Image (cartoon, rainbow over all chains, first blue to last red; front, side, top):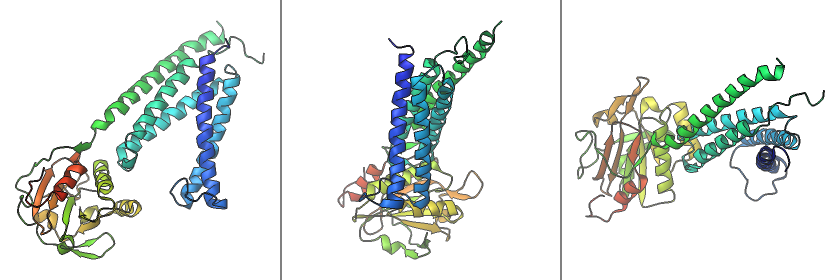
Length: 139
Length: 207
């Protein structure tokens, strides 16, 4: 069995979701601003909203690539797990604040569910991250 | 002692710290639903304030958020709901209450809804909320002291004039079918309860 299998699966699964959402966000931005192929926009927002969506999409894709790298070599890219944990906890807090604000009432309890998923994933990254190697891998 | 051995305890402490933070946030996620929620039963914390059930709601002429003058007669002819709101600026429960009501009455032509907002709370953020959400309501700004006359005025947390959370369901002639007045904005009558009262056949008691 490959070493750190659970961590690799967690990183690859998280990366896949981030890549999917990043791609959709980027497509939403490109579709509305350039080609307008889709009959109905993927997201109902204004020009600046699509711009922010495109920026978020590129960031998510970059995050996904970093996670794929750590899935391939877990002990080399350990810092990605730390960054991912921070990102997931911030994402969870943001969703809790959004739920409390009352502005996203139509989303129901989806924001709370997403927050719980993010926190469980963060715990996974904290506890499944491989230990620091005894000797630096490049030594 | 090697570097790796020196670094291990802080890393472990960090793991414990992050784990405790995550567990705390998971508990918040589970319990945050109790911060505010609709109530399935009506309540009346201030029985002496505002018209009683069976009384006519006082006539008024107020401007809506876009500046158009609206008379209380505009609510006659169908059932109507008058929702008095403390603020759509600093009150998250009130925003949730209004969005619940908007979802319940969206597309309906058999009930009209008017939000009544204290003039001091018609802030730019409130007006942006109303504009962005395209609420299917009259959003009336009370610059004539109606809320005060109803006995429903109260200062907000920042000291500015605000209002208690109140809901009045009126029949087609403007008589009160259901009233719900609360001192706290953290609970409000469920939109389905309000709608059921508004759409009840004449002569039937409000739920």
